[in-house]
View 1 (cartoon, rainbow, N blue to C red):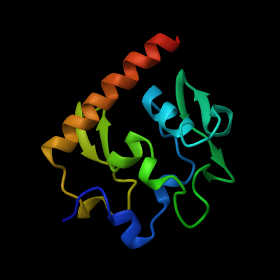
View 2: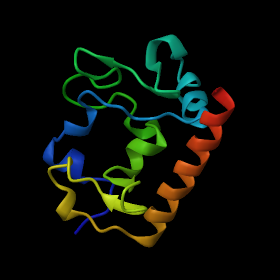
View 3: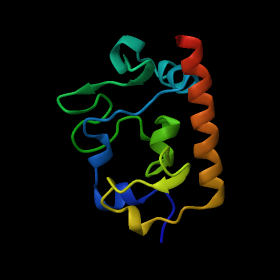
View 4: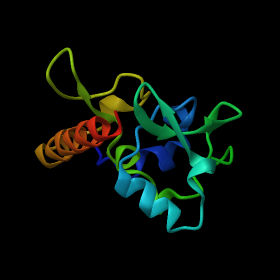
Length: 128
């Protein structure tokens, strides 16, 4: 079992970068803007939340081989495949990830996902 960090790189998997619906927090946006990117390039608003844009079916920061901002990627990307399942009311490993069974869902990761969901919900309410 591994941590959330290296399996994607190890397997060269980009599935979660395809047609992404990754929400962005204001701190994610500020961090990426700090790299020199304009919000118009990477942010889209859908269903009342700010998300990563897609270009040619994948995240704008994925060049077809790798994430070009990997070390500075959004918090949700860093935590994936750990996601909050609203139907179950808890954090789970997302079955969409073809390697989800190879991860361990540590309590610290679960807490980080819950905190991110709370932060995104609060920010979303401010946008509405």
